[in-house]
Length: 316
Image (cartoon, rainbow, N blue to C red; front, side, top):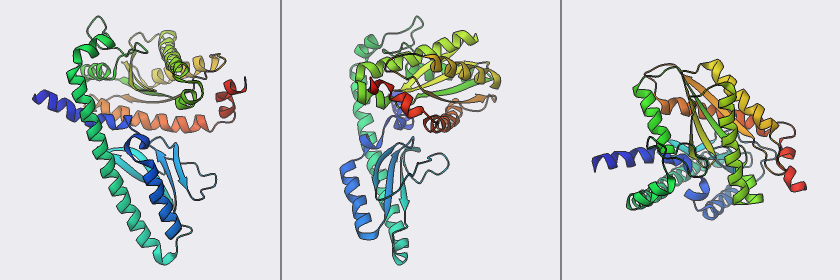
């Protein structure tokens, strides 16, 4: 029982990244509240998810582009992880009200954090209990590799838990250097919204094929790939140095650029950090790699012609 409690505690520390404002908050109620801020005080606000995708805009922000890495605004965090951001503009707030409005917004942020955490824990408890009750069925559904590691049913990569178990072994064996790479599919939701689940699933599979092909073409036979959440993959390359990680990422981009399809455009944001100290933890290294990935995502999505290439299937 104690081991299960520990596993659930670790789950709560990790899984908040799988949630978004849409799953944690009543967005209609939040919109009403922020509209009252604007109506009564002149405060303009923008709400984004953790990656910087705009969820709602109240007021006039012009061509404002959120930069959650360098200018994150007001963070709403759950278990130490940011789940969304609220940007505030005080241009239209009367000077004598500015301090009071800032204090009220701070109080609202605190209420939202408490609401998000309560919703998050309740949801994870329900999922965890269901998994414990159906563990045999779940194992049969997910299948396993020859050494018992669970596989993701869609892609055949390691499941989240199996990947983390592999990292634990690398940590215990003190394998350094190890290149830690985070790969995220740009605008996966665009393809899901416009073409449906079959095509968005096909995009995920094609991206995995690219990640695996890049490993073959660069000669890294020991690449470990895990599907951490829907469109996010962690990749570990044991005994790989900085130049090796660069080579692998460049090959992924090269293969993706050559991909031809009437609908799909496998654009992949990549970030990496090389673990060189046996004392450093993979959790921290992959967290740093995720920030590198977010910077790459911002660069890719703001490159000339990106939007037109992404939407090519809509013009057919």
